[in-house]
Amino acid sequence: MPYDTRENAQKEYTLKIPQHRHCRKCGKAFVGEGYYCSEECRKTDGEAARKSLRKYLLIFIAMVGISVAAVVLRFVL
Image (cartoon, one colour):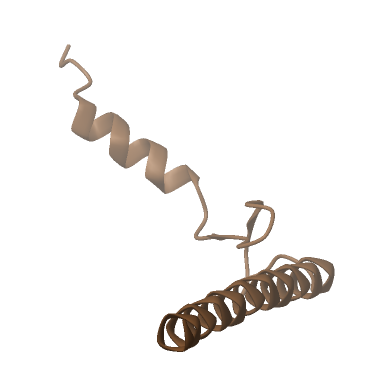
């Protein structure tokens, strides 16, 4: 009897799993098109991205403001 090699076992395993994707938000496997498993995941991921972008934009603006203030104060004093 031939031994079952890792290669044969891998082929059998991959044949049993249908082609699928993983949701960008929750990681759930789904069959279909797109990046998200549901409309809810798409909306909540978009909201989280906008919130994160807003936070980093405010941090950037604060850093630029602090830098400008430091340069102005250096020349004034």
